[in-house]
Image (cartoon, rainbow, N blue to C red):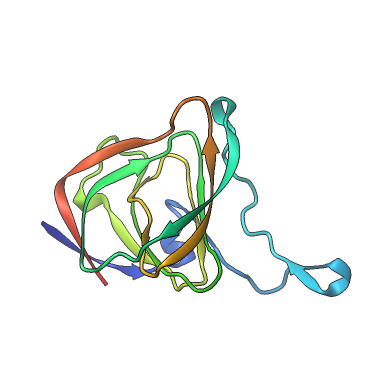
Length: 163
């Protein structure tokens, strides 16, 4: 088993796989000045092959670490967005480049959110299912269509994730 140290989630670390969703400085005043609007994601890829956007709530149970990862998945036809709902929720993102047909343990990175960050995982990016460190809900924006958009891959070598 290969051991992989989890690193902090930053915009630079996430850039090859999608983007971090976080409150940025500035923003445009709206609602008579009572709110500030921040452009979190300029565009979402959710409508390929007659897909439509679907908003779901995942009620996650906290995972225990160290964690042994054996499977990755990808959604070739759409982005996915994960946002902590109702309070601080941390997660570990296990990611590998979508350009690889069969990524292995050496191709993976693991990133830890700070509890306030959301993420957009770009279409085609290999990732592990939600690895929440805290019990509770996540808002998930994803694609729904006639065909299921989920490829799964068993890793040839298990990955041990350590915080």
